Image 1 (cartoon, rainbow, N blue to C red):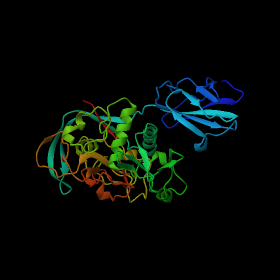
Image 2 (image 1 turned 135 degrees about the vertical axis):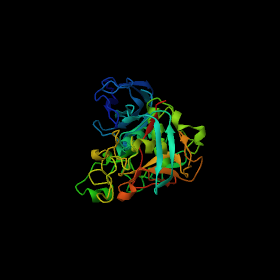
Image 3 (image 1 turned 45 degrees about the horizontal axis):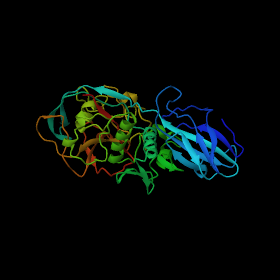
Length: 392
């Protein structure tokens, strides 16, 4: 670490969620490159302490006239992707800190689901019952996406300039993704960074306090759920499925052969949820209880994802009934009374399919064949999602 007469150089590393960055680096160099100009340089950061490769690495250069300062919005000089920076307006005595933000590629916890034939729908609930064949295997998330998982991917997207904050909400491609301006959203923005926060309704349920990062993300639109799938695809080097074509005809963008992460189709969701005996609830045909599901008889807010293991389905997926409703890939439309292979849902509609029931559902609304729908820009305090991926 070099120290100049006019400037001292300090290097500080900060971790952000998935990232586990080195805590001490000793090779920040500061040198004069012209009248009043200083050149800062350091070794590029490409790996976390555990050896995993990092993606989305950015460097925040901070400057102060005080030696041991805390980096903040007020001390931020620049944000760069390269491992160097030239300061052209240096006070007589300057001290630098370079805060590094990087991300380990996410590894969603997915459960494989074999393809198969099943009777989709239920009498007096979702009619007509019709046979559906899923030709290939796929994977679905063991749990609903948590606030912490969404926050980390969204922060990466902010760092990469893929999203912006408008009116207090997260926005991309002109569509609202996450309604952070609503107090029921457990993700907020402080000094340009996304942060976790408790919700008043959550504190009413948990007066001693709770950990919002473990709860399912909510107040997220269909576009926000689709964007999350794209973000984690890009972070892991996979082709993004949705891109900016949120409203594309599904026959032109077939989810069953997609490479990256995506939302499950309605047929995939129901087949996995009731696997493999077309049960009424994830755990079987017994009525919901407070030990099996998070619903209105037991809760006035969400519970941490995966906190009801006795309510797991046969594959080990959690919270398929209750906690939060879950966005599906499909546009909403009526069932056809015909055999169908790899159904895509309606070609167009004003609403997207929702499945699973939420914490504010009554017990009779938790049946796995129940269909719900909402406009893709809608936000609910009991609506989230889980991810899927094709395995063809």
